[in-house]
Amino acid sequence: MELTRRPRRLRKNENIRDLIHEYDVGLSDLVYPVFVMEGEGKKEPIPSMPGIFHYTLDTLAEHMKEVWDLGIRAVLFFGIPDHKDAVGSEAYRPDGIVQRAIRQTKEAYPDMVCIADICLCEYTSHGHCGLIRDGRILNDETLELLSRTALSCAQAGVDIVAPSDMMDGRIGHIRKTLDENGYEDVLIMAYSIKYASAFYGPFREAAHSAPAFGDRKTYQMDWRNKKDALVEAGLDVEEGADILMVKPALAYLDVVSMIAEKYPLPLCAYSVSGEYSMMKAAAGNGWIDEEKVVMESMTAMKRAGAKILITYYALDIARWLKKQ
Image 1: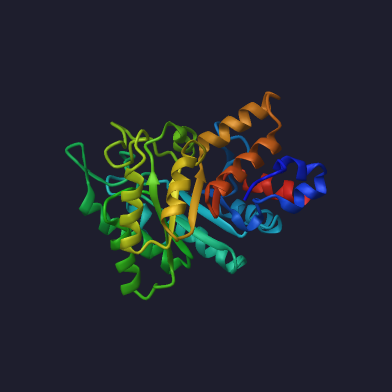
Image 2: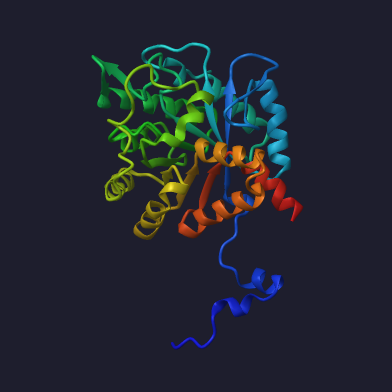
């Protein structure tokens, strides 16, 4: 077809632009990450993530009302235990902090989609995502503990488990464990493409999960590589993942687009702590229009092919959408 008019000619007033634009960010796209910790009566700010807090269960209950009233219908729980050990035992304890947060939230808001991050890094004394022996990660030995963690969250009422550890074979192991115990309907959101990124810095403060030695480059992906993402996502699809994820988001939109085109499963983009903190810092200094930059960024993720957006900006976005 021969074009005789430039597309911008069709956008000469705002109502026409709203009528014909292609992508929107809506409340149903958003997942809000929440950090829960032991104790009572505490709501502690996370210095590197302005506006984000650690909540004890009682203050979490108050916060979840705000979340629900704003129209957010999906939350992702991360736990901050009092006790850490070499095997991350608090991760899979039936009455662990995340398991209790799930039960509490489901009791108050049965229709809230509760997602549990499945990893050991917040719970191990060494800060790595799996068992360690002689300074090396033990992939296969870790799978049993990840599956126990996923099962304990399923028993607490979780809707989706989200393994973020990047151990080989964990999706299949978790799927088998859930199915054998009658939790076929619990979905698996796989952190399929998780790069060893410098954008995670604020999160490691928030989750108290920085490695005590070494780094995670032996099991997270090399951020310089793209084709590896196809392999990782393909393996997770074969093992039974229901949702795929790319993490981080903004610096990896080429990967988001590639995975969205290759696989028909719903795709999630995780806009990580570093992205959030950079935008908050720039907005705090008056260098950017926060709302416009955030919405432009989130729309870029949708345009690249993501259906689900995990973002610490979820509550702000909800407020902006209501204002509109």
